[in-house]
Length: 455
Image 1 (tube, rainbow, N blue to C red):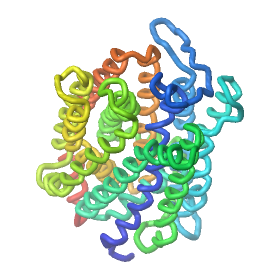
Image 2 (image 1 turned 30 degrees about the vertical axis):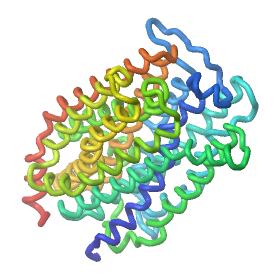
Image 3 (image 1 turned 180 degrees about the vertical axis):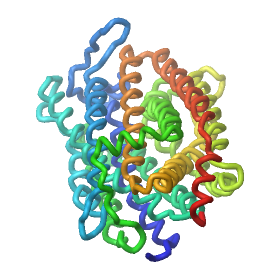
């Protein structure tokens, strides 16, 4: 088996740039497109699904919120099934690459179709089509991302390689997510220079971005030979038996619970950002990219220090600190427009403060999952990396689902106070994640690894 190099790790990381761009389009712009703010309607946006809300007790649910929640429930079944298929695969090209190769192009096409409605105007036919396309979107993401993530501990045989790989894929994740924030800026060019309508400019931009994303997702597929770097010995454990074994790992349960709370907080913030920029800061929609690019650029400056500190201080401490800083940033966001400073200055302040936790949380959680998966493999003798990362992916999707349901329910009134409340809720979830993660026994996991490997 060949020794992995940083060049190979970077090639692998390009795949994450692709799928994070597609994920960013959905996470950041789905609600924006189908449940537009009044300011967006004034710019020429149409509505395609019923905008009314449905009262269940004290909770207000919207069509978009219910659709996204249902899609995540669907993911609860597909994640372990795909992970098991990958872990047990006997394909001649390996256990992971064949899945990624088969789904990359359909993944991009389906992302475009999410924003295509069969008819104009608000009706249930558009809602049903949206539900179908979102189900296919999340299934496609599972088929690509679960095998992709399972390659992380297989390529990163040592602790140093795992942290380096986590750093590289975090860089490409941020680039992909930042590119997704460019959507309204590029759409504006089509409107202003080529006379496209608001909706057609938006859809054209999604199509271009999806094409670029597909090319990126195919890079590791055709440039990495899985047999050169990974153990392709299949697991014989059935899907839900494997999932049960995975959730018997106490340290993993602690991490996953913390991770769910983190993704709820982060997704509320990401989904709300276009609304915060327009409604709270009083800025135009094209400033979304400028603020996110600032956060990304500053965050990248902290990657090297985070990489070094994680090897010296451990991952757990840094993540808990990141949660605390993020919570403070979300609280600051809730007071946007009331701090006595200009909208752009306020926005830059939030972006810079968020950059530090984004650097930490972009790198270290993946490395923790790889550590837990490796330690579990040493103790049980089974290679079930796919299932561990499937469970982590499900935690991400569950957190995003809860966040979208909460955000759409909290902001049905489309008022400033509702957007401010959403930011406060995000801060509370973030603090909860810090408290839960404090129970994680990192030294115990590392001891298992160091006693049985050269990591």
